[in-house]
Length: 270
Image 1 (cartoon, one colour):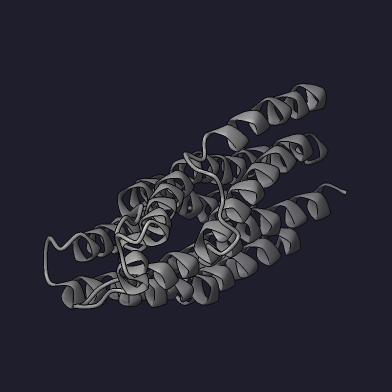
Image 2 (cartoon, rainbow, N blue to C red):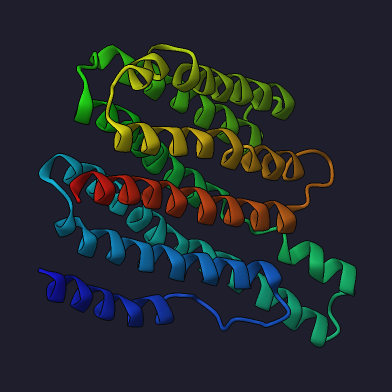
């Protein structure tokens, strides 16, 4: 099984290298960040699947979900980095050929942002991360499905609000506030709400540790996303720094999220 997974990773590497859509320009900091995150997501996916055999059966689903999160992100980052790199290289070519000023080239490079790809990714991976709270509690205690649905609905409100704001479908500030309120509700639920209370009374040290770590990620790590959102809206959106911050947030939150579950699963299994 491990050999097969490593083989899949090796087969994926040529796709990873060839599907970028354009050569990477070392001066393109945002483009470099897209490549780093793409490689990190692939490595994390293979790692979680390979290490899945080390843990007890009750943790296997959680690690599979962690691998799905990074695997889906890897697939979308292949396309996102391609969109960004093509736009950047075309703009720099216009600068070299004298058809654009430096300011115009930079503005054009930032004009093609892979926002739709990013939200498609989040629409799948964020609910999967919400499922992890439910799965961890399920390992050690009885938990009602209603808790899962409350967290899921809140995450969807957060994502839909953010997408509508960034795509100009509604007032961006209002949509941003709605998304923030949904995020705050998720934080409340995992700390002081039903989910937090169930975790506190579960009695399983490994599960409590994993739950505590991932809710810290949701609180501190997810706080990076609003920075990217508010940079990317308004009359003069800074799409370069917005994407750079979004890439950092995905790298930290998706991979660290899975690693927290992996550490708890190995600890409980040994």
